Image 1 (cartoon, protein in one colour):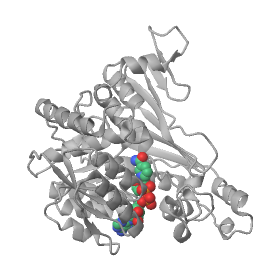
Image 2 (tube, protein in one colour):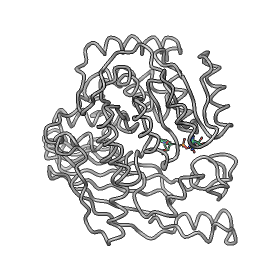
Image 3 (cartoon, protein in one colour):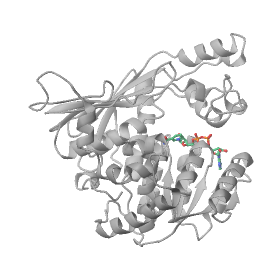
Image 4 (cartoon, helix red, strand yellow):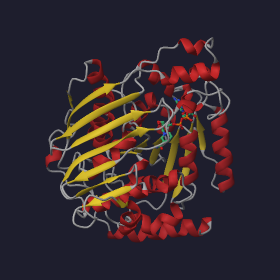
Length: 455
Ligand SMILES: NC(=O)c1ccc[n+]([C@@H]2O[C@H](COP(=O)([O-])OP(=O)(O)OC[C@H]3O[C@@H](n4cnc5c(N)ncnc54)[C@H](O)[C@@H]3O)[C@@H](O)[C@H]2O)c1
């Protein structure tokens, strides 16, 4: 493992060389001019757990200056300031005196780019304001909660020309990128079917003791801390797949959604809801006030999406029951398939007939050029390294003010799964149509060139 300064130098040199070789994608109406900045001045809105992770990764780079930070929680501001001080970067300006103070931050002319890592209900509002202020905008997942918010993001991008990237890190996971490489090299043939989802036991995240994020306890809302403060309320009030993008983001890229293909419709069904209630009773007792809460969200929500190219995608949301983590990926085509559970691949004519291969050899053979190049450097970045790559793509795109790999149309189409699944569940699994957020452009838009070693 290289030391920190050689890591910085490596990233800087590679990025400069890479930028010269890359064709600049022009996906959107974007009317602002592309430019090239040596140093990107970044502001972070929300420096909770995720924002702090982004902060740590940005401080590893020589081409980023943390200009400002904003958080309504002074404790989080202090943690961020301590980290910045250690890194020897100058002290940033600070915002967060109230919920809307981020708007004063956005008034700062010197800020080039903004990263939003706040609770979900703030994402679209903040992203919209950031685009209106002319900032290159990165927003955490999901980007939007309602159909209106999905359109707001698209319309604001189109009217301002400001770019928005949805910061979906799972798209940059090593196995995902290797499988994407296999898809692009036609190893699986014509694509037919996918499975994916967010299958993560979050009971100890949604409920805690109000003192530490993963502390034992059964509190949420005002009495909780970190995600239990805001995330859990979505399970109380919505029966929907509220977190679809970790699963569907990678699949959408593999099947060229918004670039020659499109989500056309969705049907969703929800099971009963017992997981969070049982957890509260087990850990807080039957008499705990939260034992009376009725959670609306079914424990397992299953959606089937149809695409205009004739594929189906089964998306699962499963966060309230005991289970080991898995995003449950399956990518299946006319020649074979990959399944992440079981870690196995079958390719007709290469694998022994009707027998699975272990996926390791395949994944190594098709290791993505980005991972080959940056893998050693990325490994400490968080979530196995993928957090480095998503920020790398953001920073490199923002420095040039060009459309990012995961853009506003992706943000809208992926996030729309939440309101559409809710509507389908409410109507006994009735199919719901996706709007065409690209307004017909998906037919002509070319896929992003993913198989390269720049970003
Ligand atoms: N991509 C990933 O792997 C990943 C992982 C974790 C979280 N996330 C996403 O990141 C986002 C943040 O999650 P988190 O775990 O950091 O939550 P968190 O609760 O730890 O942090 C959110 C922060 O936003 C601050 N905040 C709230 N309202 C604000 C406002 N009006 N102005 C300024 N600051 C405000 C809070 O004080 C808090 O510090 C969520 O959207 C979550 O889904 C993504």
